[in-house]
Structure formats: structure tokens, C-alpha cells
Length: 357
Image (cartoon, rainbow, N blue to C red; front, side, top):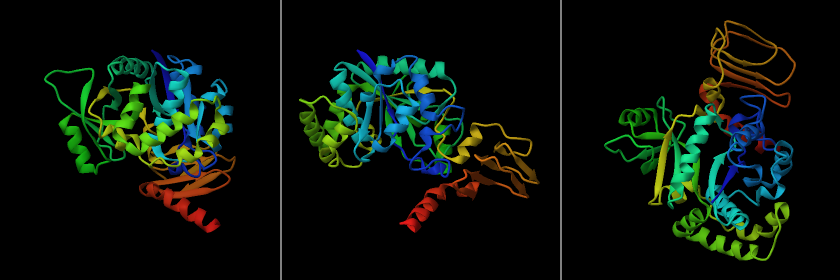
């Protein structure tokens, strides 16, 4: 069976504004290294899956950016969603395209914008997941939690009398408050939901059809339309636009993972971080002697502690008595925000957009 990868790269990344924009979201930023997040993801997975078997699902408007960033990927492997209909639609539609090219295949679905420090361990676990998924099950990779995080969903697995490599999933839990997150850690059978899934391509299509009747109907319509054509890219996106718009907007977690009876999880420790907000950078970069994270060539401070300073221009940033703030300058925009208010960035961005419309 062929191993393929589907990289999910359609997100808009509003939580990193003004670094990320609608035209250039988080996956195309060099947030944690000199390479973009999506480039890091591709270079990681290509060690076990060749470029011609890597697919990228994204929005039509990011086609040129992906071609520039990942020129090794065949253009027909860039799957363009006509419109945003969440991950269940994206995975089902991508599965049909992948199955047409690789009829007997196993698919790893991976985010395009996560940090993984222990790459060798990650690839070992991924190969274990591929092996387990041969038995017509859904396998997900769950991150062993190190603290009571409230920004991630959790996976509860069924405890056994002895330590296993893979467990049956009992439930998927939404992002908890701090007290509930503490209880999850104490119980010892809860993992962070990484959003990484492994399955047979035809099996996940059958599970979507089984549990999601609207998706079943739309997928069958698309399958019929794709039978007698051989096109890709924008032309294909336009060709199935009418059918694609009929998908319900539902995530794969809600549509399948919470309903399927055959979900397994492998607990892993791979130095993972979803890099989901400015505050998450505190787990990525070292702080200076005053507790500041500084990504700026010219930064000067007096009595300033526990800040995140990012400057993309060659200008001086100076702070006096500033504590617990995020300061981001891109040249196009300047963000000054308390660290405990970073969840409000999307609301601010919406306000800016509405004032321009």
C-alpha cells in the first residue's frame, strides 16, 4: 500500500496578525526558524514519503505562494478548495482525488504549521500509525501533556492494566478551563489533540459517508463528475465548485472522530507545539535576562520585563517600564497588546476590516 501525506494548509492564521495576513497566513511565515512553517513540515515528512506522494490542501488564493515555497510538489498534487467548508469536507474531497491517483493508499493528515522538535521520534510514531491503520481503524497521534493547557482539545483513552503502544479512544474533549485541565493531567489518560490522523484513504471516505449523510451525497456527486476528466488546480476547483458548496461546514473531529467506533490513539512525546498564538512563542524561544522574547535587531529597554518584541523593520523599538506586553511591528501595521489579551486579536482585525468596507 502506498503511503501518502495530506498537508492541511488552508488556514488564515488571524491569531498572528499583523505578522500573518489573509494574503500570507501563518503557514507561510518563518516564525520559529529561517524556513517557513510549511517548508519545515514538508522537509520533515519527505524523509519517509516522496514529494510525488505529498498532497497539499489549500485555498485557491494560496496557490502561487505554495508553488513558490514548495516547487518540488507536483502542481496536480495541490488540491484547491473552491470555498472553506472545514476539515471534513476538505479531507473527504482530497481523499477522492488521492484515491484516483493512488487507489491502494494510506493517508497521513498533517497540519502545515506546527513545530516538532523531535523529528526522528515523530517519524517512528508515524510509521507505527501507518502499520496500525492497515486494520481498518482510524489512528490519531496524541501529545503527552506536560502542563494543564487550556488552549488545546484533549483525547481521553481507555486505560488498560498494562502500558500499551496504542489505545482505544474513549472520547474527544473540547478545550477545558484550567481546573478541568488539571483534572485531566491527574487522571493520566488524557492527551493533547494534535490534529494528526492516519487511515486508509478508502476507509476514511467510507467513514465519512457512513456518519455524514450530506457529505456522502456531495462526495458521490463529485466522484461521478471526476470519472471522465483528468484535470487539476484552478480548473478542477471551478469544475466542482457547485457541488463543493453543498458540504456542511463541519470539522473532521466533530463529524467523524466523535462518532466513529474504531478510533485509536498513540501517545507521543515529540517536542510538539501548535504555535497557535504569540504566547506560545514563550515555549519556543529563550528569554533574555529580563524575561523578554526579542526578535528585533534594534531593541532597547529600561525596566521592561516579560514582553514579546518582534520587529520586521530596521528601526529602533524602545520601551520604558513596559511589562507583560506583545509588541509587533511589520511596517504595514503595529500591534501593542497585553499578553493576556492576545485572544482579542481576531476581534480587532474584524474591526479594522469592517472600518475599511
